[in-house]
Image (cartoon, rainbow, N blue to C red):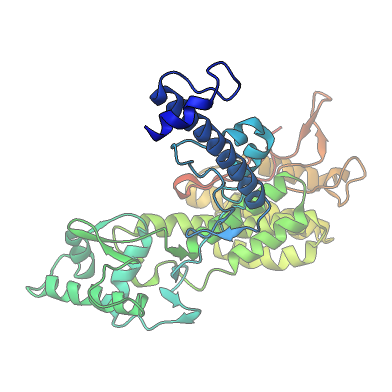
Length: 416
């Protein structure tokens, strides 16, 4: 009644007149207030988005650097319309939440194993004691199959050479427990091991947390041959020497005769001999003939049937001014092959003998007829009977990888 009396003096058609229906007027007033509050709220969110976009980066829980989140939902559950009205600023705000593009650093292995010789393990930059001979032999078997599970039955067969005692399984479990304590000295009690894990009815060394010198040797060998392919013999010499420095004796010395390891031991020995030959070829390519002679004489004496080494030594002797010795070596090799194997030297050796007899300038270093011999894969051109020019050696294949550990090698000279 009071409102009706107060409104009685207001002209019904004046500028301050209220609607005839009181509830309708109040609803309209509330809607205007809500619209004003919403505009104020959106302006406030837009201001906060701009300030946060310029804020310093903060460390996230995963270690990446991010900006504080700027796309906070409004009370209505949506991002502010002011951000949509300024797409450039909104995009900048979203970009700041992305991880840094830095490549992830390669984690340092928990254990480094050395298998090119007696088995060794390095934990925290120091050699660790691997225990009794059978315990070391167990580790050598696991290292030879790193990343792959080795069945308990196979381990028992190898460690006890087919005659395991009744206590073989408890002894094996004790060896595994001892190795786990040595390889992970800081592991909490009753926590799962990380390095030497149980896998089904067997054990494996996790390749994600360990490193083996066999892999480093293979990588350096590949890099050396690739450098020879790329006419960079000096770098090839360096890579081959680093690869050979990994060796400390026969590979997997503790279990070199075990059936499961023997093929890998033979593969690695062949690869080592190829790297020795590759290093001598690179020495010849840089003109270090006398050094190559000294290296190759001992190598050929130990491996007289390796024709590639014989070729390299003959060329090194010739370049060192020892033509007679070079011819004598080729003829001795020819008689040995005939007497022991009943075969003739391959045509490449016969070609090399003719070139030495004729004192072909193509054998000199550097060759006056063309570019210097820089690698076994890129020799000087040698005329053939048809008057054409062919390489004195076969092209060396590019070794981009060592799948399965196989390593291919091309001989020095090629047949005419």
